[in-house]
Every structure is written in structure tokens, then in C-alpha cells.
Length: 322
Image 1 (cartoon, rainbow, N blue to C red):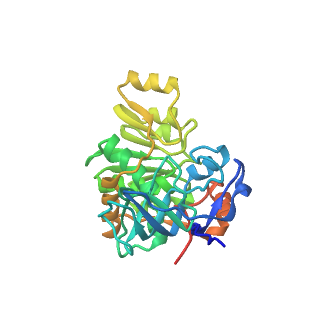
Image 2 (tube, one colour; image 1 turned 180 degrees about the vertical axis):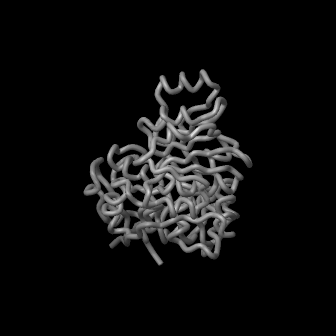
Image 3 (cartoon, rainbow, N blue to C red; image 1 turned 120 degrees about the vertical axis):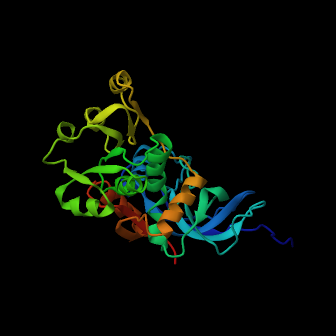
């Protein structure tokens, strides 16, 4: 009688989707646990951030790969194992990051694998929930303000949806870089945006920012639609209009070029140096993530329902382990 020596793959819980669609396509399932290949680490996920790109990907079926697909790019957790050649981390290290974006990372799960340099050590004073809320929004804001727009002291920065996920971090990072910051937000969120460091806050429900704001050096457009064309009126010649929801239209690009304005779509990417800066700022208390909603992993569908209302302040985070 022969002995079966087949090794069964370790299993884990994850939120999966078989088809594109509404929040209801997200279900809790048991799947094979990934294993790190050379240069990768296996991270036991303690918390996973939820972002607009998550529900857009869920609905459109993009950025996910073959089903069953697992959403999620914001991760905070503990290194469980390291692949061949990894020297930056050891099992037991607490890390956070935005692995693999825009390719599938599978953050809504008990474990993820990714290149070690897609993670950074989590500051000791930052809990996993707040760490998981930072990577995607903070890297986005940093790559817009620092890398693309070269914001320096004295520059004027307009941040749309300044109380939202990217917006509330962009306000803080723009202030860190020395800018004069103007934010748009509903009246109920003005105190929060000012607390973050904004010098001016405009109630977009009562006031047309395009009529009152002038001589801005940089616009961070997290809203899309007509916000881009309207924002051109606020910019000085030679300014920067960074669109985060999609590429600007041809008419906007033409009008911007006529005035020497750089206008374009900025898509965040993994950035070890950027994450090191974010970790340092968060660890020293100069950058914080506002977490508006915390739910367990199995309520991922509910998290998407809440996020899609567009009424949350800060971030939504799923707790996974710990």
C-alpha cells in the first residue's frame, strides 16, 4: 500500500469575488495561502485599508486577475516568513505598505506575499488599523505633491475633498512641505480640515471655488467630473493640475497647455523611499490617518457600501487578525 506524500497547501480566510458587480459579489471563503518566492515576504495581515479603487475594481473587474479575485492594496501586519535573498526583514517584524499596485495584491485576506521592498517597518507607536489606512492615500499624495508638483514653501495648493481619504492626507503633506493650503469640504467637516492644517476651507455646497480661488500653484483633484475644467480657473500660468480619478479630457489638456499648466493623471505606484518618509512622519506624529469606520474582514461588502456613499471622513479599515 503506497503512502500519499502529497503536501496540502496551507489555507486562509479571504474575501473573494467570482464576477464583477456590486458589494454583494464579495464573499468570505477559504483559499490557499500564498508562499513567498525569492525576494518576497509573507505577511500575516492584521488590518487592510479600503479605498475607492477597491470598489471601482470590484464593479468593473479590473486590476484583479483571474477569479476568484481578492481585492485590497493597503496592508499592515507581521512578517511570517521571508523568501530567498530577503535581508531587510525577519519573521516577527511589523510592517505596512501598498504591495503590487496596480496589480492584484490580495489585501483582504489573512496573508499576503509581495516583494520585500513594497513594505516598510511600521512605527512602534502606530497601531495596525491606522497603519493600514495610510499607504495608498499617503503615497498618492506624496507622489503628487513632492514628486510631480515639487511643492515648496510658499506655494499655494488647492485640495479637493479635503476631508476624504487622499484629501486629508494631502492637506497634511502639503503643510509639511511648507505650502499655503486651501481645501474644499462640506461645512460639517471644516473644523476637521482646519485641524489638519488647512489655511482656508471652502464649502463647495455654498460657494463656487472657481469664482473665489486664484493664483494657485497646484490643484489636487480627487473628485473628477467638472472639477478639473473649473480648477483651471484657479491656477496660475505654469501651475500643476493633478487628476486622480482619470486622465483629463483633450479640451482641458489643450487649455492647460496654452497657459503652460501641466495637467495629467497621476497613478500611485509602490515606492520604498516614499513609504520610508511616510513612516517617519507618522512615527513622529506629523502625519496621521483619520479612520472613520472599522469593520471586521467578513463585513467587506458593508465597508464598500459605506465607502460608495462618498460621505465618510478619512478612511475605512478592515480588521483581519490580532
